[in-house]
Amino acid sequence: QIEAWIRDPYAIFARHILGLAPLDALDADPAAADRGIIIHGALERFIRAFPGALPADAEERLVAIGREVFADQAARPGVRAFWWPRFERLARWFVDFERHRRAAGHRVLATETKGEMDLAAPGGPFRLSGRADRLDVTPTGDLAIIDYKTGQAPTWPQVKCGLVPQLSLEAAMAAAGGFAGVPAKSVAELIYLRLTGGRLPGEDRVLADGVAGIAEEAISGLARKVALFDNPKTPYLSRRRPMFERDVGDYDHLARVKEWLAGGGGE
Image 1 (cartoon, rainbow, N blue to C red):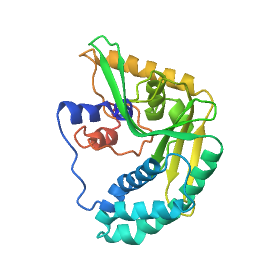
Image 2 (cartoon, rainbow, N blue to C red; image 1 turned 90 degrees about the horizontal axis):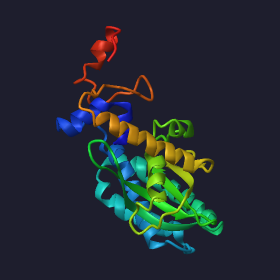
Image 3 (tube, one colour; image 1 turned 90 degrees about the vertical axis):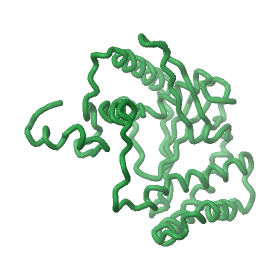
Image 4 (cartoon, helix red, strand yellow; image 1 turned 45 degrees about the vertical axis):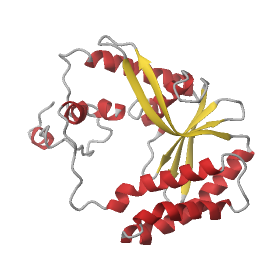
């Protein structure tokens, strides 16, 4: 939600202050909406089952876990015809990725772990909370934060400039010991695992330079934003910093975005 707050404060106002939840589109593809949950669930169960050395039949084990997780969605034609074959290709890539990573000395520390961190603010303490897909320990004893992406992964320039702060803020929480059961350690790597099961089944995108500085800037930027919005005179503007001009938000119609864009006006 911090990312939404940065890009579109009005969306935060509408969802959390007005209490308006967006409705699913009438023609929404449930398979597309649920695929991230399905893939995350299968990988989490696999990693929890095999946090150390992988068995010789690891790919078969992951496919079997996937089959169980997919079972509840199997009645949907799109899942069975499209996403299951992709998962099978993804399973092969993921097991190979895990074997190489663990052979290099990385080890899994935690999955789906909740973190919290309190910030001092003019209006009183502000609690940042989130959930990391996965935390690993690197061969040097530092932490690596891994985020699974079944859709398009952000670019590192977008992360560094603060438009996509999720992993940066998780790194700040990890460095402060904010994750349950995880000792405070410096974070050496931020990793997006793009998992599509397509022609390129998976891809690891690693940022290993300047992670500590990026995390510090993210948390200080959040502190400044909290202080700004603790002032009741601060407006919740619409589309304050969209990543792309063609981005469409859930509350654009309430903010009358099309009307003021058509008229050439501003916020």
